[in-house]
Amino acid sequence: MRARTFLGFDYGEKYIGVAVGGEHSRLAQPLTTVRCGKTAPDWRRLSGLIAEWKPDALVVGLPLNMDGTENPLTRAARRFGNRLKDRYNLPVHMVDERLTSRAAQHTLYEAGIPARRHKESLDKLAAQTILQAFLDEQPPAAGGRDG
Image (cartoon, rainbow, N blue to C red; front, top):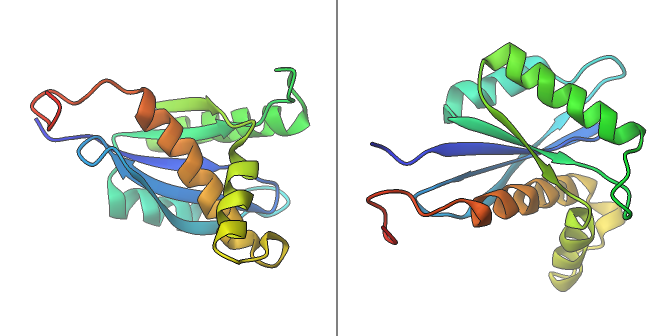
């Protein structure tokens, strides 16, 4: 049985950060940023990523308020996750992303890159942080390094 591959998404109203990772390496890598229009994301580009990486499941960040309550972006991210599930017939896992943008900003700061000037990098890194949190919670793959 092969190790599963995942695509992770940091949903935003203008851009969606995308990351890739898998059970074998247990590491997430920033991949790209996809534009999100007023009515829908760039489904052609998302379909291309799905076709290229052939993920076994998708992981979407769930933006919650710090007290755990939902906000308008929470509902939009859930809708995006449901649309991914319906469109690609893949499992979608929602992951609490409350601190991922802050972690991504810190990574850019440490690298000397001002986050406000590199929104695309920030979105990809946030997606990486979301996917990494998901991978860290998964049990080791059977037959893998740890199994």
